[in-house]
Image (spheres, rainbow, N blue to C red):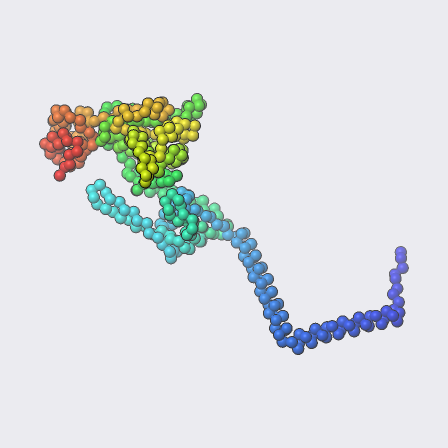
Length: 446
């Protein structure tokens, strides 16, 4: 073990230590004199220390609050382009436990067939902050509208709704959105939604329509039954198509004179299948091949695609200085959308035309049109069935009406018959007496 070292203070060491102590004491005395005798320096130093302390405290508070926010708070953003955006606004507009100071109005204006008008106003949350209480949790809702970003499809400002709540209550977001979706779907129960193309997407057109009963559209014997059977057979045999590598889609063509009930039957068929209808206007000026292909590949679920008057889309492709071509869709573009490499699967497409002879043979090929049927003017069977539908039990008058109508020896559309029966809704005798009016297809009842 080494011996501890012993330090011996020599006279030289003692003198050096004393010198250092003297110098340090003089420096400290000088600093105290400057701070005590110079008030500007003392005040500035105090402010500097105070400012530094406040800045440090502020930085620490911001960091702490940011940490707490990340750990305790959760946000959910719903952009206006998302389908759930309108669902949520509708749901919140009906939520009872809501505190809102900024409201917007949505007006539903419906004009009924009899001319009466019903208007319904709904107040929904406008841009700003709102609070709701949902299942015991408080949720802050912030609706923001961008002044710079615009939805190019309709020119409306881009909006977002942000929901904020405690992290522990984040599961409520799923429950809330499901309630909003169920509420939106419930409002359409028993109704058929009509979609039209709006830019690159499908949007509901007007209010959902009450489902039309299939028996309310009277076609000739066996026609309606044949179409319904074929559609249902197609719907239940998806696996059969997939196993054989056949594209799972089916096209129908209803052709015949105007007013024969083609579109009415499609609407009734959609109602019986609980499907909606997507109407595509091929003569639309701004419709292009690419947009047509995109729309036909993004049809809403459980929807029938309806192409009305398909023969008229390519008959008059005239070029004008103002609008370019009247139709931007080419015939080859339509064929590719119906049966090309990029064509959609699991679709039911109905096409209608008044002039089947004008259709190009290329569109009649199986895979594009798989089932075609003639929907003609009213036969004696249809005349009798329609009479009894409007006047149940009037069998004797029905026979007389059918004989007088067929003796006219002129084409009679079901639309003409319906107009006559509606005008005399409570008097089958008057309908019988006015049967001569069916000679004129454009007769106006007064």
